[in-house]
Length: 70
Image (cartoon, rainbow, N blue to C red; front, side, top):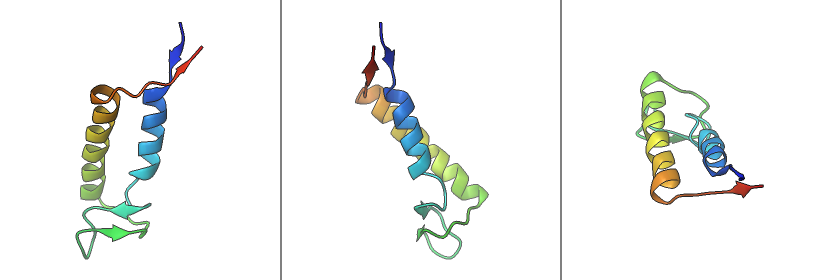
């Protein structure tokens, strides 16, 4: 029996990419989307959390990404 590292890798990569303000912020302060502003708000955190959950669920359950280590 091996360990399935697929969900762990997907979670870490998505957490890095979807951190509000790192690459983009949706919704932003002045516009709908701002890139690389390094600021955040409560609404942006909520939107990014919903995006994170949806993309994580699609990649791990619907597509079924698996990385097996023995």
